Amino acid sequence: MCNLYTNKKSAAEVAGHFRAEQPLPFNAAEDVYPGYTGMVIRPEKGARVLEAMTWGFPRHALSKRTGLPLKPKPVNNARDDKLLSPRGMWRDSFLNRRCLIPLTAWSEPEGEPGRNTCTWYAPKDIDLFAVAGIWRPTDEWGDAYSMVMVDGCEQMSDVHDRMPAILAPAHYDQWMLGDPREAMELVRTCGDALAVDRSTRPWGKARQATPGLI
Image 1 (tube, rainbow, N blue to C red):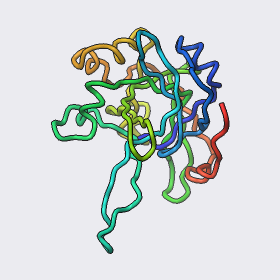
Image 2: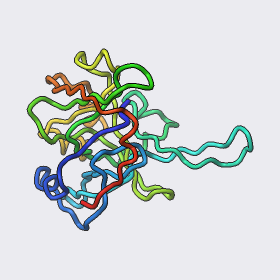
Image 3: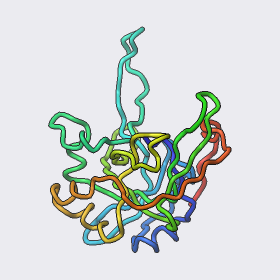
Image 4: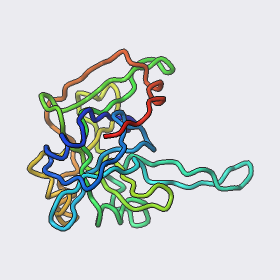
């Protein structure tokens, strides 16, 4: 599953690329981890709106030791085979609140556990793209979003068996505005070639980075 992605573009660049409005300035991280704030594009009154939301739906649990509520954890990946589960946490959002998540690459850990590094993936020769997302309002963090995940492609099979559902520009409106059947047609593994960057960056240490103003 994807637990780190990056968006190296400014909000103005993202808004221009996706022909979206940006009503207000906001804070968002360049490197986005679960619980961080990232950019999301959603439909509103016939237009596309660029906003900041928290990556991950809140999940609540009780402490096994005390029985008291724990701090909610962000659930940032929505499996394709769970989107329509009747009692699942994704169904209502998939049916009613689909969005685009703009990014320049996503990362998976590769190598020896404890010493693994970031391997980055993106569609080849594309410097900004969108993956399928769903969102909902929350009491805990305001609006929050999750990334739709599908079976991984052959290029990344040696690292992970899942990947984000990449959307072609011609399918953006079908994902956000189409009926559930039309949207589900786009929940599939990307067949395009990927650019792969096996970096030397340690996997976990960049979490210390502070989100910047965009």
